[in-house]
Amino acid sequence: MWIWKCVSVCCLLWTVALCADPELEEEELRARTFLQHINGVRLEEYQRLANAEWNYQTNLTEPNKKHLLDTETVIAESLKKQWDEVIKFKWQGFRDNDIKRQFKMLSILGPAILSEEKFQRNSKLVSEMQELYSTAKVCDYKDSKKCDLALNPDLESIIRTSKDPEELKHIWVEWRKAVGQNVRQMYKEHIELDNESARLNNFTDTSEYWLSDYDTADIKDQIEMLWKQMKPLYLQIHAYVRHQMRKTYGDLVPEKGPIPAHLTGNMWAQSWEHFFDQSKPYPNKKSLSITEEMIKQNYDYLKIFKTAEEFFVSLNLTAMPPQFWEESMLQKPTDREVVCHASAMDFFDGKNFRIKQCTQVKEEDLFVAHHEMGHIEYFLQYAHQPAIYRGGANEGFHEAIGDVIALSVRTSKHLKKIGLASGEDDPESDLNNLYFNGLSKITFLPFAYVMDLWRWGVFSNDIPSQDYNCKWWKLVEDYQGIEPPLDRSEDDFDPASKYHIVANVPYIRYFVSYVIQFQFHRALCIKAGEYVPNDPSKPLHECDIYQSTEAGNVLGKMLQMGASRPWQDAMEVVTGQRNMDASGILDYFKPLQDWLEAENKKNGVFIGWEPSKRVCSSSRNDNKPSEE
Image (tube, rainbow, N blue to C red; front, side, top):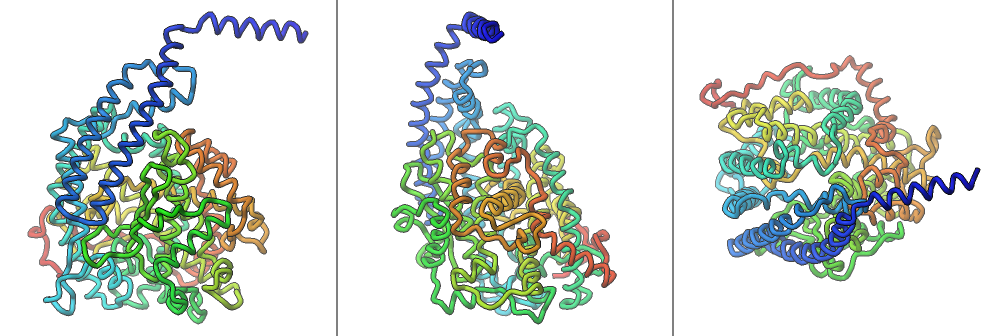
């Protein structure tokens, strides 16, 4: 019998060989050589672009902006020529999956497909919107002659610490005036050019182009399903926080309506952890706030980043190379305007990786440092890959890695190990800490979803330009249960108050990252022996993978893949699953959800929200007089 099986297999192989297309085989060989050339060219181009972008974002001058725009234009023309060569190949019939994957990625040209004039115009629009955002200043509430308040650190500090609702409203409104009203027309033109680019790339609009990174036909449906999976948890924390806010602000916070955006302690109401002290479940328990301890121990920006590096090294991952410490911008310069929004950059030479962050000595920036260094670690791990593969398995992966580490860093167990916390844990303090994390993580989910739900509607023209602002607030109310502090109109353009809107950065990656980071965390915690399902002595929210080389080796294996394989393959390496699943975040916050449900029921708290009484109209003149 085995002889006949052998003969059958041999015959099959012989048939395949006979049926092979000699021309296609020869073309596939040429394609391999072509890819080697293209990847070499791409590395040089990405290096030039990274240098130009870094120089501009860390020194906002006209010459630097011109150099960036000129560099983008030159590279766009080069990409167009490369693309002309790519589409000559019949790559869809290639048998080598690696070659086929690279060609598929190269076959999408992106914005460079626009004419040179239109490409330059679109790049100029985005850079000018970023510059307006980064240089905008607001007048002080108490001193109207002091008009030099920048978003970071001034306005973010005020909205985080002030308890005066009038001052908070002033800051909230004036920031949106300073940015939104100045960029609305530019944004409309930018959307038109982006959509033209998408259509030339054979996508229906820019949202389809953005989501092509996930290579999953029903990705929008999957994301909506994930949100519905997590919504009951969000409704509980929303109801609890609103109830607690009424104790602080009285009827400024409606009993059954949406929460006023300016009272959440965050300029965009995207996370509410700065309302923690007024709302923690057990107010008599000392908070696990480490900012004071960091100051006491003489932390500075360098010590913050060295602390982050030590975590990655403890997992048997890679230390930061020397150029990182020499070239990064880890504190805000005093002699020039910069883009303070924290970011990490790969210079594509295998040794130059940098972070840009206007670091302050506070716990939030310690976590941000771990997040940004997660990007750098990803860069380092896949630096051996061809240029086309030097990216995350999908956009959400890159955002998730540093946050996976930060989940361990936030635990009292870890903070004690590194000397930033002390004392004995107890169930009440533990729940307070979990609640604090919930105010950061759970409340962010609908915000991240709304950011791109709105833009998907804008790109498809389901949200026309005359409805930009009112449709924004409709989505914010429906998904977040948040309302503005006063009536709004189409004279305003509130979405532009967020950097990622004006910088044209897709945001659903952050929603995805919040889901998969808990999937990764759960799997890595099991690998490290720090989490045992159904064992109350080892709950998921207390897991710290610090110093676990077992967890680090699995994580490193995934990071090394870069974008060389479908994201489902990368997911499977760490989690054993091939789909995104919100059960990780639900497992992590299960003790908090149980407590919130019992507490809200005990206090008769209304779950959900009734429609807002705030009005958004076509023009402020159509409204009743403004409450400003």
